[in-house]
Image (cartoon, rainbow, N blue to C red; front, side, top):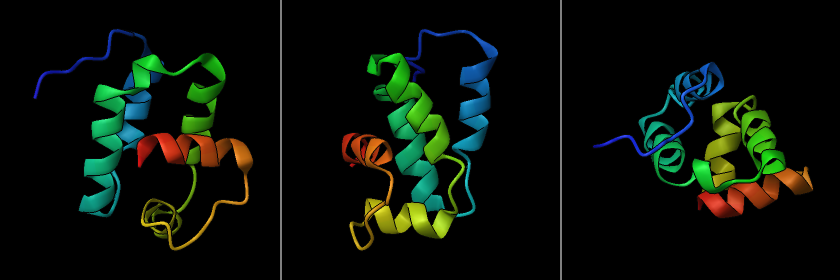
Length: 83
């Protein structure tokens, strides 16, 4: 799969590494979003995405499966873009 991210800075590479999770499902969801949609986010959304990646895998999976709602409104906006 070709990489469509145009930012060539170290922060994107750090995010790419953070998108590698302990669950294959999360790897697929997060890396696909990073490759296809991340570049369209505004600066605040990019910060929210980075903050979202700090959460535990079990929570992320629950957010993406919509079995749990994230308590942070800004993170919910990013979650909705991902799903």
